[in-house]
Amino acid sequence: MHVTVIATEGLSKRYPRVTALDRLTVDITPGVTGLVGANGAGKSTLIKILLGLSPATEGRAAVLGLDVATAGAEIRALVGYMPEHDCLPPDVSATEFVVHMARMSGLPPTAARERTADTLRHVGLYEERYRPMGGYSTGMKQRVKLAQALVHDPELVLLDEPTNGLDPAGRDEMLGLIRRIHTDFGISVLVTSHLLGELERTSDHIVVIDGGQLLRASSTSDFTQATGSLAVEVTDREQELLALLTAGGLTAQAGGHLLMVDIADEETYDLVRDAVARLGVGLVRMEQRRHRIAELFTDVPTDYPTGPMNGLPSGHPSQDQEGEGRDAT
Ligand SMILES: Nc1ncnc2c1ncn2[C@@H]1O[C@H](COP(=O)(O)OP(=O)(O)OP(=O)(O)O)[C@@H](O)[C@H]1O
Image (cartoon, rainbow, N blue to C red; front, top):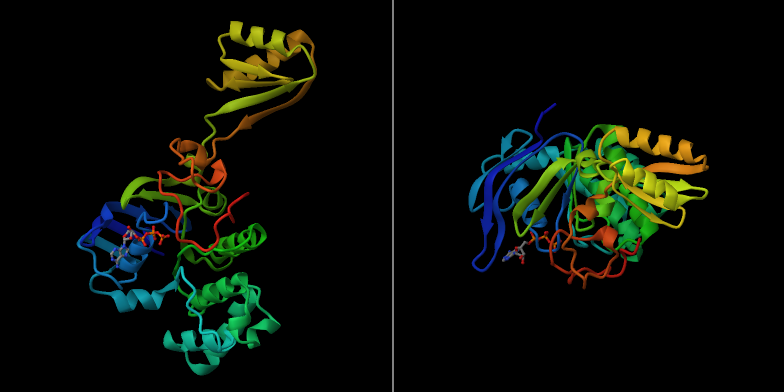
């Protein structure tokens, strides 16, 4: 087991007019890692460099301990890749296609057929797998793309925008499948999305890039760290409770029967409980509001077509994806 599945150091990719990656240094450990960034942030560029398909302009990167500059073929034998765009031949069935991809990865014919059947079943394609893919829904095509990334039993899969174009139910199913790639098979996953909210649910670690630069890399729990506020709902006398808490040195706001109390430290809970007891009012609930990743980014563009939970780290409204409006969760 590699302690670091992906490591980059000062990695840059410059095109004549655009710097797609700008001195990116990041370590990615085993598990599910979400790579978040607006359209054009450099996610696909990073994936192509990691697969050894596109040379970096400067800097270094290693995948499973192998140098991307010299060991591209070895890396591609150990890594599965799900590309962002539709790339499936319409006249071929999922079974034929995935068997072909398994053979390309070096599996002998019988193993390729067996692995194909298992993998297609795993991603939820059954009888449809014998029909030409031209008639498939977007969700079915995404599943085939996922299956071909998994068929040769890789150590790591790189999934480029796997939820693209899916409706909310399809997206949830895809996110569940992605999670299980790691929990059921122990395969590490790097999954990209411009939607922070969905990666927060799926990933152990989150890496945020913007304009080709690293904005943040940490565990998902650090992102969602509970430093926020305590929601306290009482049956009545909320203004008196507010006065008591404020007198006790806490910062709080009241609205209706609900008070939002800033958590100063562990004692905050005791102070709230004691004040409620002193007033003799009923405590309906007391719960901590966790910050969600998207709330950490304050400069969400106002013209972005989705709700705030899917906010982006900077102002790059989505322009070129087929599924606009699909993000309303
Ligand atoms: N072959 C290329 N030639 C010139 N510029 C490119 C090329 N490939 C990508 N770029 C530019 O590099 C930047 C990063 O692109 P990249 O595709 O990596 O972004 P992304 O985060 O994957 O976004 P998306 O989800 O839209 O693909 C963009 O400004 C893009 O226009």
